[in-house]
Image (cartoon, rainbow, N blue to C red):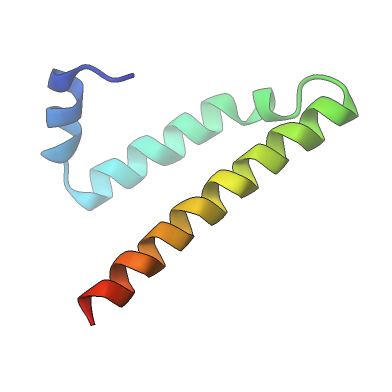
Length: 67
């Protein structure tokens, strides 16, 4: 979990700065996504897909409420 101070710093960043930070973090950590057995890697990506699907579903529900 991020500290309140870190969260505030991120909130104050421009979209470009946040994107740059995201890309940098992805580059630095991408190799870790593929470490482990084939089953571990598959499970890791399964969890990510489920989390992304849930986030997308929540956003669509929120958008539908505003109409």
